[in-house]
Amino acid sequence: MVHQHEHEQAQQQNKLKLYSYWRSSCSCRIRMALNLKSLEYQYIPVNLLKGEQFSPEFQKLNPIGYVPVLVDGDVVISDSFAIFMYLEEKYPQIPLFPSDIAKKALNIQAANIVCSSIQPLQNATVLKYIEAKVGPDERIPWAKFHIEKGFEALEKLLKDRAGRYATGDEVSMADVFLAPQLHYGTKRFNVDMAKFPLLTRLNGAYSELSEFRKAMPENQPDAPLA
Image (cartoon, rainbow, N blue to C red):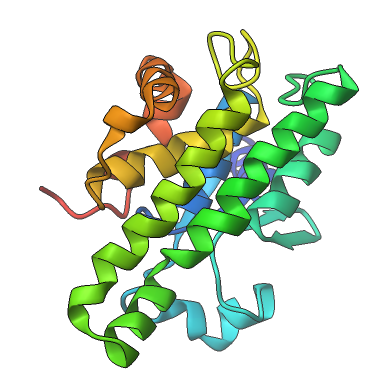
């Protein structure tokens, strides 16, 4: 029994650790990637509303104070894009990049529209700033404007390139970045998806993937009880 306990402890220590917040779309991307790659991980919640991201312990992991952070043994990586690239190289058994170089570039382009041109402009920090400096009534219109602008670009970019999923018939990086943003756009900001038939279809396809459903905010251990 002692040996078994020691073995379990060693396994727990060797397991990937993900510092995450249930409602963070950036964390959601990595939860999806880990699930798709069948990688077990320890979920460590960071309550952003309580300011736990500003604690000295967390600031050592990520000085800018954002989730997610991945810990793999002695390796500590923050930023969802960097984490994704690390996982893809370190754990290539189930790849999320297509082998075709042009398709790979397309995936990076689509992912970057989400993580550079949409998500940072509608995250909590920016919305709080807009509310304080411009006015509380501008918060949602600001978010919707930037989400819709990004969705328009993605709809055009992927229109003639999508298959069952964003860039073909296999789930890839673009899907991992797109799925959480579609979820948030529709659930939190009530974006009218009638203008985006392709993205609407993709959103439906994502809802059928157990690896994506498992990663959704409401299914996380730190999600508040309904």
